[in-house]
Amino acid sequence: MLEIKNYIGGVFQPALDGETLDDFNPATAQCIATIPRSKAADVELAVVAAQSTQSEWGALSMMERADWLDRIADALEAKHEHIAQTESMDTGKPISLARRVDASRSVSNFRFFAEFSREQPQMTFEMADAMNYVHRSPVGTVGLITPWNLPLYLLSWKVAPALLMGNTIVAKPSEITPLTANILAETLHELELPPGVFNLVHGLGPEVGQSILEAPGIKGISFTGGTATGRIVARTAAPMFKKLSLELGGKNATIVLRDADLTQAVDGAVRAAFSNSGQVCLCGSRILVDASIADNFTKLFIEKVESIQIGNPSLAETVMGSVISPEHLEKVESYIELGLAEGGTVLTGGTRAMTGFKGPDGIGAFLRPTVVADLPHTSRCATEEIFGPMVTLHTFDTEEQAVEMANHSEYGLAGSVWTTDLERGRDLATKIETGIVWVNTWLHRDLRTPFGGVKNSGVGREGGKWSMEFFSEMTNVCVKSGKLSE
Ligand code: TXE
Image (cartoon, rainbow, N blue to C red):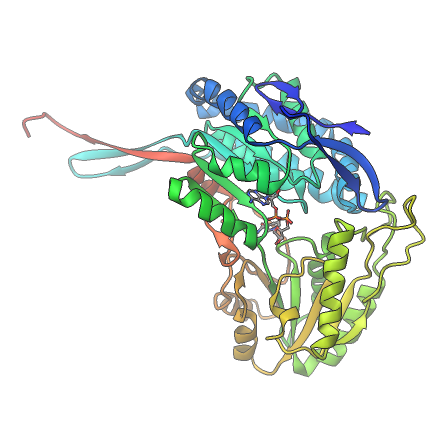
């Protein structure tokens, strides 16, 4: 049983009041760790530690901090398998996914921002009689709050640019997936990152998370999580004029046009629907198919879904593991029941997966990938975020109808379009009200591009220069040329 501690001022320590929370492996229902149930006093300790080292860390050049990112990337790379195994155990995701996505991307997040920063020119604007220099300085101490679906992947996506731009950090991972954030803290400690630059406080969102939002010494918040929580974050932090970046929920459309390469579209739609058991905000949870190819697409799609290997996340051949918790399993099941009540037809799945792999209590949060058809695109199942292995299937007759259906959502994060006519796909993509649209692919990521959504999917963008701008304040210095008398 791991006894995880907070990491504050370079010291691993329990919550000041000694309270703890249990952390479970959702695939086996085993308690695998305890974490501090931190409160406001722990956050105050972390903010003081961060502020005490802010000027020293901020005084380094960006190139010196980029070198730090390279050292962190190297150290995490050396722990790649340990990170993957730990992430799989903490989330129930298959080890193959944890290796290929979570562990690898955590390394590349640090490597990317180190290299990207070296390519960024000084921003200047020349006038006839003056030169404007845009100077970047740190925001200061920032709060990073992250969710349970891609724990280290999303934490490192924020930590790397925050450190690069000279900020000090108070980070809080999800209380149900704390373990790889702890590996990051251990790694930074081993590298002797100056104490106080990175601080990690564990605990419940409404307690320690809320305290981070309210801490006057925290000048910016980068939050990834659900839309409901995003509202709380905005409501708390905005009146304090903190910089805010909100990456929230999604209900993304996979649009299959009649001229799509069917095999490519089916493979892409299944991957977008059920990767990480559908627990990725970018997942394609609504599948919109041209009516003229719907029968053929649906047949191939269901065959592909039913070939997904569900089981013990520790096995290399497993494609789909458990969902994040028994409670989340019940939430997804409630949507399956709702789908039936709304007049839908379950084409496959809909029941718990008898994987033959059972934890000690004979339970494991395994749900078979589920496809529900015959629901209107305005139904609750087709408009509310389920965030699990359940998708709805809809048909359209015209592209205008496909666009209207795709945009019939309070969310606006991502989407994909499948067609052999790339210009048509690109043109259609510009009509979809989201922050990201893929054409003939999904989750194909260039880290230089803007990442984020609109409507209930959040505010702001992260990635490349957008992360550098979020995690810095800009001062424009205008220098008049020539003699003062002119
Ligand atoms: O989110 P929660 P979860 C979304 C995804 C889904 C959700 C799942 O769509 O809706 O995240 O993650 C902390 N004050 N995305 O369930 O509950 C909480 O402890 C401060 C979108 O974890 O919102 C956790 O650390 N903090 C995303 C974090 O907020 C609070 C990609 C998120 O918790 C708090 C991944 C409070 N009052 C998931 N209450 C994207 N758009 O990229 C909770 N927290």
